[in-house]
Length: 496
Image (cartoon, rainbow, N blue to C red; front, side, top):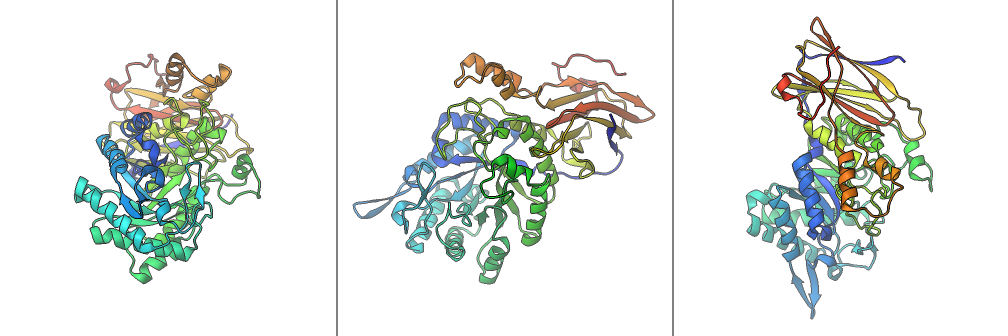
């Protein structure tokens, strides 16, 4: 087997690696944020993955009671929103405020989306919508202070370029954005507002031009994309859509969008390995490889990259019950960590000094060498990834690191069919539809990133490491500068 060589001189200067993937994470429906299990899972994503903000739909929909008409009078109630935001801030998470959907009392029509019936029509009177936004922002500053709220992001609507989310025209959305942004800035110039929150990187040039020519406030540009967007033929299933895509399509789209927005902050407020909420690959090691590759390829292109979504506690179509059903979540219903969760855990562990990247040089292998800022640890992160139906085999990788002292330890953490793969163990049990507490504990244990000693050789200032990567896998090889940094649960191994 011919080895793929990852060769790097650690004496060379690196480039900054911002953890853009930690700026925000998505969820589903605002009402779910009142659930204790939702809050517990989000707390873990903050504490263990470094997620700083959370975004969800339907903050203004009827089921939260934000605005209703009672006896021909508009009645505003921010109590449920306060309860949600109080909980977020208590756990150290800020809201990324998606201003949607339309309260029915303001709506121009009855068209809705999802089982919770979010109204997707324009307001019958944009002044009434602006008054709601103004009241919400004023109340938020009175409750939390302008210093806090100025650190939030206010995003106008969700995917208005899709008929599933907006019955109006592009011009209708642009008018809604202008009213919203103006209302927010009337409360405080320090509030941060942006859009157009479109699907598939659409409307960006027209939206920027609209804001520039009309002197409409625009603090950031947001959009969404998935590797299934606009690929394949009408009626294709998810596998066929992915097969018609390309391995680095999200990076290529982000490059194009970055050119359109110039120096403005660019946030992808939704992305995933596919846009299918019942895609089996979401629960498998395939997703981990896509996450690592996509996030590291996006360096320097985006300011925030928000995975959709952090939990399978998610009810857009119906609330699921099967432990592994292909949901968007990093965590399943029981809080069991999927391979995707472990991918973000590996990314969170990374330093911020990128020394080397091996990209576009091999059909399935990519690799990155990243140093900790204190210089006491270096990680080589490797993926073996191909799109469905594309050729992929186990690959042998030879790592050569020059200009490095003899290490205290070399540790590998893997995500693949046999490592950090709780779904595989669940399937081996016969895929039970419900889990006992003992089964949950067992699956959480099998999902761990188990550190293992890795054999290595060292000669004349060069460190050499050999390892195999099976299809759809991730390996994180960490070289510690001192033996006292070795994890206590790693079995000893002699270097060779």
